[in-house]
Length: 195
Image (cartoon, rainbow, N blue to C red; front, side, top):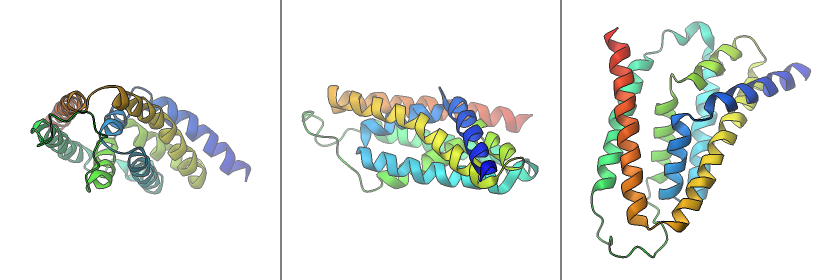
């Protein structure tokens, strides 16, 4: 039991600190401006739990065999697509006073985007390395809780913003953020693939 708690504590701290200022916090903030809070939180829990679980399960030794640069490039294309999709005018753009509308694909969008964007990122590498050295259940619990805690800070900030800024402005800003993240991921992936 001590090994589990020690692993969970170390993983929580390492992943929480590694996640601060990361692109997934920006994504979580953006999702919170577009989707309902419960959808965003559920999506984060599913994506983060799966990602950290996969990382711990695979371990550091197999980590180099995964085609993370190609996955990062696929995530870049997806983000650019989300950004362009968000720029498309909606039929009710003149009615900015209503609540943020929930699209049926919100949960799937959040889970897929978070998982692909973080695949091969430092958070995954931290969990992989720790999974090979510490109690894997402790690393999974602590790593998931650490990443979720960091991203929830951004979610609550995004929800606060969504209540105070018109939906049309939020949509254009979030589309711009998706485009920027997509371009940065694409540059990162193409640079790594070119080496």
